[in-house]
Length: 234
Image (tube, rainbow, N blue to C red; front, side):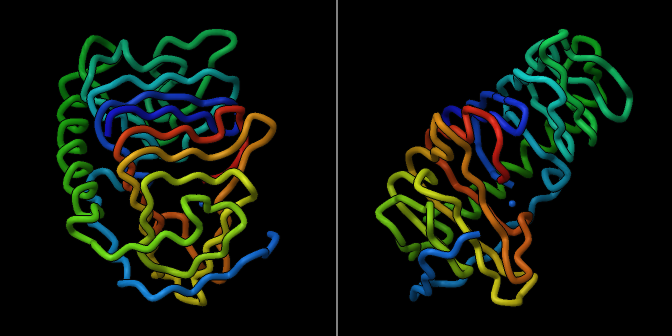
């Protein structure tokens, strides 16, 4: 992956030049398509992260942004801005208009508040995240189908592998139906871009019938924009 741009509930964007692993109704269309079952990757240390920027920075632009998990990068601590560490209370360049709480802690290289210890953990996480990213690729999990010519909004999808040149969730929300299986897995593969939301409003991924957000994986080859106007749930 080359670039990642995300804004969350309170306007959280960040950029990444490595890998995106995204490691969350109205029913209009329900699809059950013949396809291979999706196999969840082993996340290792990456499992505890809400946002991992690879070797790039993470920037929060908004008030009261919250990440329910760790954030990190193997880059310098100065490339993380607009956050404080929810574990140690260390501040990473917050301002009166850009404040965010990383509940699971922040991991980066030096200078302070980054340390040799946080850098080591970030380095180990990068290795695990890279392995997991490769293990949800089309090369490892082939046979994905395109359920809506790249448009996922308004669909209800059962577990499996889905693939398109690009993916977007713009018409309506995307609903994922686990059909009563809490271990159900979805993998979405695109060699290009993922776009969620439109300028006039956010879009969300809705989990139903026992589905868990932690079992949804996105393999994105170039870049992602997730609710650039703010709001929405992924």
